[in-house]
Image 1 (cartoon, rainbow over the protein chains, first blue to last red):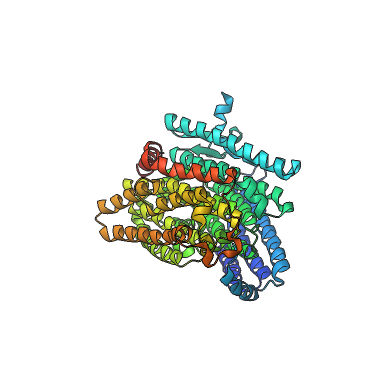
Image 2 (image 1 turned 90 degrees about the vertical axis):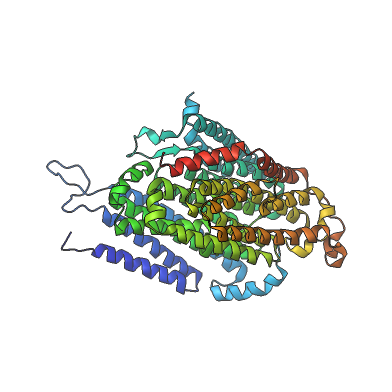
Length: 123
Length: 498
C-alpha cells in the first residue's frame, strides 16, 4: 500500500474533476452528458480500487489462499453502472427531443429561444 | 399472516410489479386502472404497516432471508412509515385526478408510459422510506429520480425538456455525491447497513474521512431536496411539467429527500456528530433562513402560478431545514410535522391549479380573473390550501408554524422567529395575488378569450382537491395522528433509540 501511495485516489479525483468541469463549462448538451458520465465513472473507480486488499488474491476460492480482495464494492458498482447507463440513456433521449423541438443542442441558443417566450408564459 | 409479515417489501413490490403490467396490457384506460388499483392497494398495505409499527415498534425485514448486516435489510420505524404514508396517500389521490388531467395534457402515445413512470416514482420513493441499507437507498433514489426526469419531460411546453435535462444533470451530481459519501463510510466501517453504521461510526468519527463522507452526503441530499442554493432545478421542473407531475413531485419527492437527510443526520451520524462536532446546525439555519426569505420574495413576483408555488416549495423546505437545525425535540417535531402538512397543502394547491389548467389551459395570474365565480369549488380548495400555506389558525399549516416558532423561542432565537413570521407574510402576499385575481378583478379586463364558457372542473378533478383541502383543515383541528407520530418519531431520532 505504501509504495503505491494513494495514487488510485488521485486518478479518481482527476477524472471526477475533469468530468465535473465538462458538465459546468460545456454548453453542448451531449458533451455535458459525456462529462456527467465521466464524473460517475470516477466514482466507480474509487469504489473498485477500495476493494483491493494488500496482497489479496482475486476473490475466487482457491486452496491455499488466505487473503482475498473484497468483492463487495465490485458488486455494488455493477448496480451503479446500470444506474449510470440508465441515466445516460434518459439524458440522451431528452437531448434527442430537445433537438427535435429547438433544432439545436447548444445551451446558449436554447436559452435565447426560451427567453422571449417567457413573456407569454404558456401554462 | 405471512402477508402481514411481508408488508415491508410489498409496498415497494406492488407498484414495481404493476409497472410492466401497465406497459404490457397497454391502453390508456387500462393503464390508469392498473396504476390506480396498485396505488390504492399499496396504500392499504402502508396503513397496515403504520399501524403495526405504531404498536410493535420498528419492523425489520430480511430481503431474501439474508441476515443483516450481510443481506439488505428493510427497516421501518415510525418516521419511515409516516413518510411512506404521505407518499403513497398523495400518489393514490393524484391518480384519481390523473385520468382526465393526463388525457388533456399529454399526447396519446405517451399516456401509457406516463403511468409506468409514475409507478416507478412511487416504487422508488417508497423504497427510500423502507430501506435500512445505505447503498440500497441510492438505488431507490435513482429509480425515482430517473422516472421523474421522464415525467417532467412530458410537459406540453418545450421548456419542460430543458427543465428535465437540467434536473437530470443536477440530480445525477447529487446522487453521485451521495454514493461517494456512502463509499467513504464503507471504507471506514466496512458496512452499509444503517443500524450497523450507526454502531460503528462513533469509533472512527473523529477522522477526516468521516467528515468528508458527511459533507458529500449532506450536499448530495441537499441537491435532491432543493435546499436553498441548490434549488435551481426546482422552479423550472415544477413549472413546465404536467400538472399531475408537479402535484406528485412537490408533495412527495422533496419530502422523501428530507426523510433521507433526517435519517443520515440523526440515525446514522447521530445528533452530536452531525450538529455538534460539525457546525452544520449554523449552516443549515443560515441556508434555511435565506431560503425562506429569498424564495418567498421571488414567489411574490411570479406571473405563472405554478412557478410561484414552486418557489414557495423552496421556501417551505427552508422551514423544514430550519426546524432540523434547531436540534431540539420541538424543532425536529416541527420539521416532521411540516413534512406532512406541506405535502397536504402543496398537494391541494397544485391539484387545484391542475384543475384550472384543465379548464382554461393556462397558469398565468392574469388568466385567473373571475375564476372564483366560474370554478367556485376549485378556487375554494385553492384558497384553503393557500391559507394553510400562510399558516392561518384552523389549518394544518398553522400547527407546524406554531411548533417551529415555539422551538425557536425555546432557544431564545427571536430574530429567527421573526424571519419565520416575515416568510408567512410574504406567503400571504403571493397567495393574495391569486385570490385577488380570482375573486376581485372583473374578467372583462383581459381574459376575454376564454371568459365565456369556463365552468367548474369535473368531479374527478375537484374531489381529490377537496379531499386534500379537507385534510388541511382536519389535521389543523385533530392533530393527534400527525402531531402524535411526529413527536414520537422526533423523540426516537434525537434519543438515539432506533
